[in-house]
Amino acid sequence: MKKTGPKGIRVRAARPAERRLVLDLVERLLAELGEEGDETGLLPKQTLAASWGRRGPLVAAFLAFDSSGRAIGVTTLSESWAAYAGGAYGIVNEMYVAPEHRSRRVGAALIAAVREHGRSRGWRRIDVTAPESPRWDRSRRFYENLGFVFTGPKLKLLLV
Image (cartoon, rainbow, N blue to C red; front, side, top):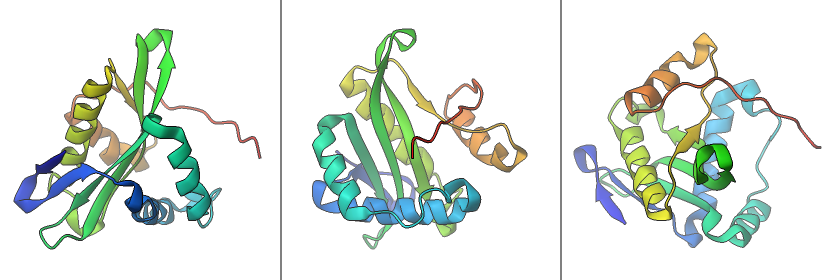
C-alpha cells in the first residue's frame, strides 16, 4: 500500500528491511516523552527487530515520508484479541511525527493507513492510549478528531 497524503507525504507499510528505521523513529519519540520513556533507555534494536519478525502479521508499522523520501513519521501497532472487542482488534503502540511536520495532517495520514490495515485484518476496533493529564490534551484531541472515543487511561505492571 502506498498512499499520497498531504503535500506529497507518502505513507506505506514498513518493510522488514526498515525495522531499524522504525525503531530509530520510536527512539526519537521516547526521547521526546522524557520520563514517560525512561524505562526503555536506548532500544536494543537488533533484538527488537528479530522479535518483531517472529510475531509475523500480529505486528505492523507504517512510515510517512516527505517529498524527498525522508522518513518523518511512524506508527506501530499490534493485534490483540478480547471478547469485549468482538474478537481481534488493533492497538496503536507508538505514534511519532517529526516536530517540524506536526499539524500538517501527517499523523492523520498514518492513522488512515492503520484504519485500512485494521479493516483488511477484520478488526472491529483500534485502541490507543492517551492519558487524561493536561500534558496529553493535544494528543487526545488529535485522536478524538479522527473518531477515537476517550475511554480512560491504562495501567501497566512492569515484569522486569
